[in-house]
Image (cartoon, rainbow over all chains, first blue to last red):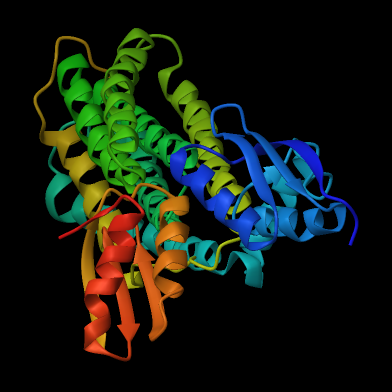
Length: 311
Length: 66
């Protein structure tokens, strides 16, 4: 065996003292001595024979700590995102949980559409100008299905998610659904109701999704929901006379892209662990989509109206 | 026998690994599963007398067993 030398390396994925401790343990178990380790900078200095370094790095990587400059996972390549989307649609094995949820979403979409059609003929038919709400009903269905999909997608990876990713999830789940709900309700009911609706949905989803990594994630989700609800309502009220419907469809497409981005982030950053499982059945998933869609639509049609509304 | 422990202080995947590592090293422990979000540690072990040792191993890592 060759002589031990000092290796100074930089890693990604270290977020806290627990990360330092587990890396120390892995190194010592593999015959190395840790001289220095710092989660904030990602710097690790360890002493071992050169031939012992490779197994240590492999075990580090298996547990989410990658040496900076590693070439096995190139970053920023758009093709990887397209490959992920293709795998999702074709139900590839390595994205099994996401594929199941994707199919659930299609079912949720159909169930919500059916529920709204039935509701229209049963309840909303006599409401004046009800057909003017139609674009917002479409947006309500898209909001509910995308929010429920994203929430359960995040839940698949909630067990042991890293702090950084958990906070990102909390922020996205607070901001995007909160913004979408705030925008729809703001357009149809005004700033006050829109802000409340957006904040309610954003804070609830943001906290529930973010708390998987503790209070930091929950706070991140709550703050994002708070801001997004108000911003969504404000955006709609400000654009009432300026191609609002067209703008909202563009905006919601971008929101959908961001939610898909979160799905890709989770798969990319957390997917190597064997903990992906779907914690919801199809009936509950579809019921939540229908429930949220109907809630938004009932609010639109029967809710209090502010001084400035689209309809 | 199998026991589920309520453990406070876990917040990330590294916490999960530390506990699995510490408890897994105890002779007689057959399986350990950590749920960080639900703050639970499920342990399957051969002898009831191992339970205090398991709790001590978790607490030694800096987490609180309730």
